[in-house]
Structures are given as C-alpha cells and as structure tokens.
Length: 179
Image (cartoon, rainbow, N blue to C red; front, side, top):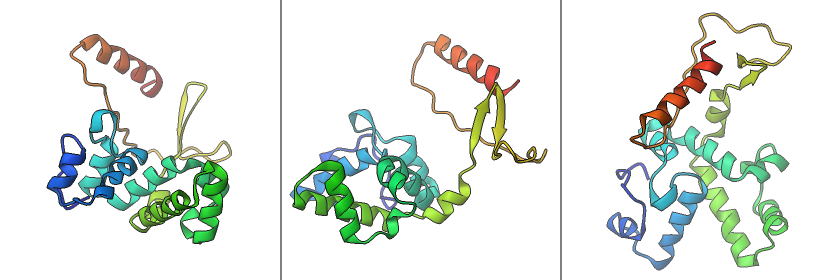
C-alpha cells in the first residue's frame, strides 16, 4: 500500500491498475473500508494518508484496534493469539461459516503482521475533558503535567464552502480548548 500513490478513489479499476487482477483481490477494498482507510464513495481517509506519510505501522495498529474493538476488549494482546483462539472468537462473534471464519482470522493475523502495536501504545496520550478542564496524559491522582509539554491536535474539517460551518466549529473549539 505504501509503494503506490493514494488514489482519488479506491475501486476495482484502481486495483487493476496497481496489479491486483485476480477476482478475489476486490475483497481488499472491503478490508480497506473495514479498517477505516477508505470512506464513503471509496475516498481515502486521513487514516490512510497518515499511514502513507510514514506513520505506517503505528497508524495501522490504531486502525486495527478500532476496527476489531470487540476482540481487543476481550484479549489484551489479540495479535499474539493462535489461529484456533481467533477462529473461536470470530465464530462466537459472527456465527459465520467455517470458511469465512478462517478468512477473518487470516485477515486479522496478516494485518497485525504489518502493524506495530508497541509503538502505537507508546504514542497514545490520553486526553480527557472534565468539567471544562483539559487534562492531557494524566489520571485523576497524577500531578499536573509539565509546563513544557506540547500537544498537537489534528482536526479533519468537513469540505464545505459555507464559512459559517467553520466559524461554529472554531467557536466550539476555542470554548473548550483555549480557556
């Protein structure tokens, strides 16, 4: 995925152009959508762009955690589970056929082989808004964060020509983040 440019639209024509010509290769589009790399109309998401920009393995780990939320809720390190455990989980979770369950387990395992869960967990900083107060990387019992801590917040804005939409978004952000 990182050896080709991000398309304007991820569809079967795009797959053919980059060499995926087998009939079952189109299932990759479903996987890309499932992990949040592709959104409505086959458009690549910010997640895919972050993956492409070089944040690859950690971005993929976050995408996998979000897509397989139930699996991560039941197992602390599901990427280390054996095939039998994964199949048992997917069977109980979905009730799908044995062939489909095997593909689910294989897909999960193959995605995990491309991800870096250690880097992803180190880069995650909890952010909480409590009573209008922004707390970064701290639990209720922790001391206040250092004054030289820097926080970067990325916000994906909707595409619109209506400036009022942007004004409202920035007004709300300033109320909560810039107090």
